[in-house]
Every structure is written in structure tokens, then in C-alpha cells.
Image (tube, rainbow, N blue to C red; front, side):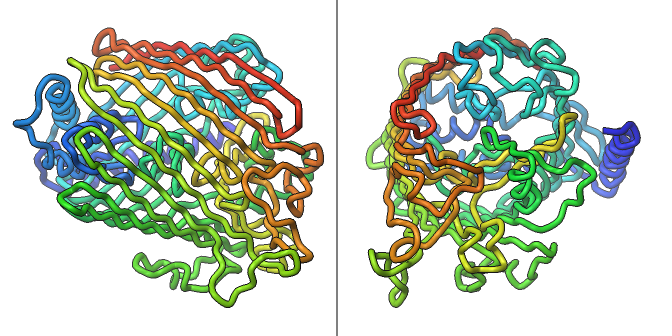
Length: 596
């Protein structure tokens, strides 16, 4: 990156801060307002969920993140006089977190800042098969930068702004994360080098405006939609950030959310897989900062939530489209937040997805939940795939689980058992021979890329937008632990997955007749598809089996000092879908956070 580019960024940042402070003088206010957006990492929502289930209520809204106003509204349903011991302590923790005041309160503006210094060490045994952050079970979402400074502003009663500036290493290290048995997050300490410095922050940076029952958020933040423990079928929390605009209106019984989120168009990086031959762990090399960013790739969704039967049942309906345009054009007619997106009938430009979620708390402390997502199904009159007839492949995803939450002395204990099943073609649409010219070169997949600049080049880190394991997967996840909110926690997790040969680069194709074979999860052959964008996968001949056993925890020594750690054992048979191939790893992360 040139020095001139750094100077320009500094000027833009300084100008933005001046504008924020200048605009605040237009308003008179009392502080704090309730427009703060709590990050998905915050324990406040989890604590509220624990109290809901423990008191026999269905889950609060599962559409995160949440504003302080919404969290306060959730808290009103808690029967305070029924709390004691751990539930009372949890309630007091929530009140304390929601009552944090700005450090500076002047007429027209409230201002706060946080400073975190994080030291993380990483140790593992297999430096051959488990390189790259995608192969570390404690993924990059959980890994912390060396330094982080968060700036919060409250201009007037209805505005909130947040930006977090970090000093750390990029996702794509020159020497590869995990390429040595021991490493840290310390800059320039081997195997890290100076050129690994991350210039892509901030990863949380947005403004929000709202009232007691609504919020509009514009900027960069993470999303998570659903109650899943292993992930969510519609919008997972595995995406580092969404560049988005989000509106949500909420009340005692209903909630509505509309979001648009933008990502690099696949044509920016799909072709480069062939040019550079770089497609390791979903990381694809791009053209660099001199290349023109062209094309639009937009996720648009609306989501409705209801609470029913005396707050015992929660029902959620979600619909989305993945919309693309190579010509940088958005048809403004599609930006209708109350339209049925499927009924635009623009298959050449958009791929629609429909989801249904249900949760039920039959007794105090037990919650049952489920998700169904529909990508492709056969309508009456459409061809059904058979040995002689070609048709669109049916693509569904299913997830269901049970949660138990109960107090033990001063601790809140929780356990969950969850299972998921995804069809092979879930989240995929179109290939180069699909016969649809407007989408045939790049696909209309629910696969998105985070663009990351490094001194080694520009990289595109691809992820599924929904369930992080994608289609062609069968997952069972068992989790349990105890927590004293604001003090310490420990939990154990067991994860088992059978995954077929399909991945995020699998070419979509019709099945049956003269096209690809009719398949079901898990697929066991590379010949089950029309091909793969990533290159030669002809050696895939079996479903892989992954077992992960782990334990993690944290302890707050003082209000400023916290230690944490995670230990995982990973065993994979039929590794990379090759029959008989085996690999394993033991991964240990130990860290320390100093917080001001």
C-alpha cells in the first residue's frame, strides 16, 4: 500500500470524526440513549435467553445483533420476583451491562472508548494438514487482534455510532496460520512477518438510529439469524462482517427485519482461480488494489417473528434473494421490503431462499427448536428428476435441537443436543453449462467472499452465507457447560460430521436424464456433479467423517484482566473425501486480555 493511500485514509477518518462531532451540536439530548448495538460476542443476549427458558418462555428474538432498546424490551418479560440465586445474579448482570454510562457526557454528545490488549498463543501437533485459519477449530471469528480500540458516540437521543480500530495480523498470513507448532498473535514474531499487518479494519463500524421500538443500522457488523449451536441455516455467524443496511421494528409479540448486504461480485475472483491456481482453504487470489471492482452481488432478506400461546412458542418466517448484476445495476423495483421475492420471477438475476423456524418451551428450563430452509423444490407441472427426465435438484436443509438451561447454586448450567442435515445442492445455483446466460459464468450461490488486502496481494476468503458447513452434510453437536456471567465459564463440546464430496465450488447442474446423477447426502464420488470451479477433484471417492472433542473456558481475574483457553482434538477419516486417508490434530489456544 502506498504512503499516499495511508494519508488519504487518515484524512477521511479525521473528517468523519469531525463530521460526527459537528452534527451532534444540532441535537439536545439526555444520556444514555438506547440505540447502542451490542455485538454478537456480548453475553447479554445469552443471559436473557437463559432467563427466558428457565422461566418457561420461548426464545427471545433470534435475529441478531440487538439494540439496547430491544434488549430492554426483552427484559420486561422476566418475572423478577421469581428470581433467586444464579437467576437473580444473571438478571443483575444484565442490568449492569445495560446501564453502562458514556465516559464523557456533554451537551449534544456522549462519548466512550474501550482499549483491549490481547495476547494469544496457538499450539498444535499437525503442521501439514491443519494450516490456514479455516482449519483451526477456534476460528478467526473467535481469535483476537493484538490491540483493539473501540469508539462509541451517542449524538442526540436517537443516534449511536461505533467503530473498532485494531492492530493485528491478516486472515491470510504469508507463512500460513498453523505452519509451525507454536505461534502467537504478536506482530513480527516468527512465523508472523511485517507484511502480515492487517489494513482491512475496522470490522465493526456503523451508525444506528432508532427509537423504543425500531432500529436502523448502516455500516459493517456481523449477523446471526437462528437458535442453532453448530450454526444457522439461513444466516450464520461465521461471516467476518456484512456491509449492510438493516432495519428492524420490534414489539411485545412481533418483530420485522429487512436487510441488504453487499459482497464482491464472483467475476472479480472466480476467473483468477484458473489464472493463479491459488485455491487453498477457500482463499482465492485477486487482482490487487489497482483492479476495478465491478459488478453487484447483494444479499437481501426480510424476516418476520411472532410470539404465540402465552409466549411458549416462537415462529419465524424468512425469505431472501441473492441478487447479482455484472453491469453494476440494481433494479429499484426489487427493493420492496414486503414483496414475496420469489414472485419477481427473475431467476436469471436472483436465487431465492425460504426459511421457517420454530421453537417451543414446554416446561421450565427446556426449549425445543428447529429450522427448515428451502432452496429449490419442484412445483406442480415442473419436471421431476428421474432416470429419463432431467429436472432441478431438490435442495432443503434441516436443523433441530433441544436446550436445557437451569441454575446450579450460583451458576447457570446449559446443555444442548443438535442435529443438522443439508441436501448436496443446498446454497448452489448454476454452472457454466446451465444454459442461463446472465448467470452462467459465476453462479448465483449463497457463497460470499470477504476481500482482504495484504502485502502479498488481494485475497478473497469464501464462506457459505448460511450454514457454515454448506450442503452435503450431516452434523450432530453435543454441548454443555456452566457459567457465572461476568466472572467465569467452562464448557465442553462434541461434534461429529459426515460430509460428502460437494463443496462451495461444486458446479450446479440439473439432475436425472442426460444431466448429472440424482444424489442424496452424503455424496461419495466426484462424478456425481458437472464439475468443480476449484479444479481437479477426481480423487474424491468417499464421504469424510470428522470428530471434534473440545473444552474451553475463561476467568475474569479482575475487571481489567481476563484469561481464556480452548483445547480441541480433531480426527478426520476419509480426509478430503479420499477413501482411507486419515489425519488428526490437537489444537490449544491460550490467551490473556487486558481491558480498559
